[in-house]
Image (cartoon, rainbow, N blue to C red; front, side):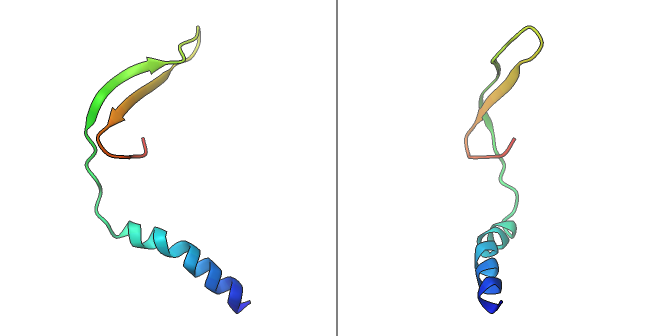
Length: 54
């Protein structure tokens, strides 16, 4: 049991360390533009200067 707890803590450690950083200000450098356009759907895309979740 102690082994599994240690593995779980070590697996979560990078996420906890990253959570302490402040929000990163991503700037849009290209877009927005459309991709995969069909008659009833499309995908809106853009490119930022840093990796970010949109």
